[in-house]
Image (tube, rainbow, N blue to C red; front, side, top):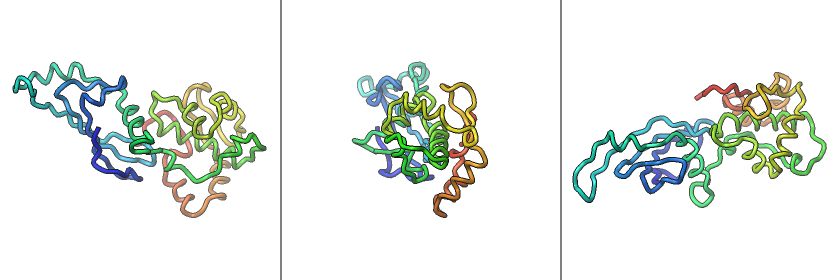
Length: 215
């Protein structure tokens, strides 16, 4: 995989080039096919703007095989997960969507201390954020459990305990979705700096998740 830049900040674009050498079980790129993918960091979510499919010269026969035959073996259904995995690799790019989340100390959940309403509000906002920016094929609960340094079961228990005055879950527990209440929004804004408050207002991923693609 080749990337045209070494940073991926808010609203920044990258051109990612992948080919057969990048096949890892998530995607399948046939021989002589190269994909150039334009992606943008949209408030922590990796958004695919465009995909360019390039057919390369066969080095052995020095002739082009039919593009149609190659495309029939092209499988990029999990391309969003592949990009998320590759960019998040600490040994390479070390991208984290949570860099675009609000600054907050969540160690209270790790230490199992008494949780205040503002803690619950930020926890709910973090969950909503993850629902929006983590690819659908990746478990949100497990991802957040790792971030908070707790077990997945502990995370699910916390999710069930969020007061209804702060967070309204949509669907069953295993499904993504939910909304912050107005009271929770106001509580969060009162505890933020001006810069963080602006991010809270500007980001479309911190207050609700309905399953729709807001990008």
